[in-house]
Image (cartoon, rainbow, N blue to C red; front, side, top):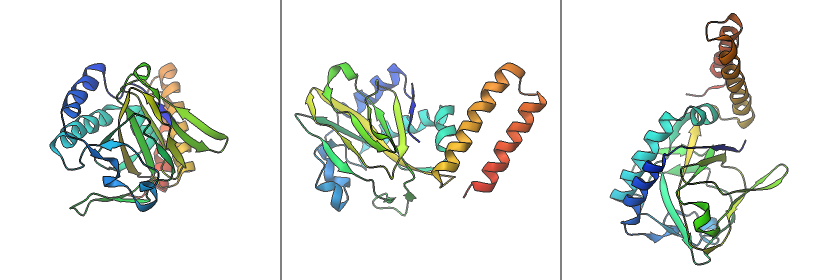
Length: 227
């Protein structure tokens, strides 16, 4: 399931994050690449353990916790600390698949990467190219969202970042482990959650049908969650 999540960061929060990361020193993006990805990746990245990445990443994590749509779609158990990258001057990231298990360097923190996320931090009008191309059941899907918006997609998907031919594409990216490992089960729960929300607007949270549907949701989550 691929889902766009709007307004994860407000314009003020985007500006704050950009102030932090634009003033920092950037390094070769292959600092966190796997062996295969390193062959395809050409970009710059903030050092994973640098003060700027930690401060800006904290802002992103706080924002994710406030996003009901993100929580409903991802059912997050663990989130890898957000990283930050940028592309310019023809840089790109060729077709690849994300590493199945991500380990935070210098710690015992690790996650199974069920989902990947890209949070855009640049106005699309300010750069050409840089689309995130995600291979899916019905062919490739092109994603290029406004600053502050995020796309969530299966980490098992083949994907790439197209060359940036004008300007700079700046983004945060990270992975997460869901409480529900199976993607189809997550999709069913998400669809049910959205239906419950829609019905509750018309009938109210105390309506018996809403209470019953909420019970079905939680019983399915109880059956499928791995926590």
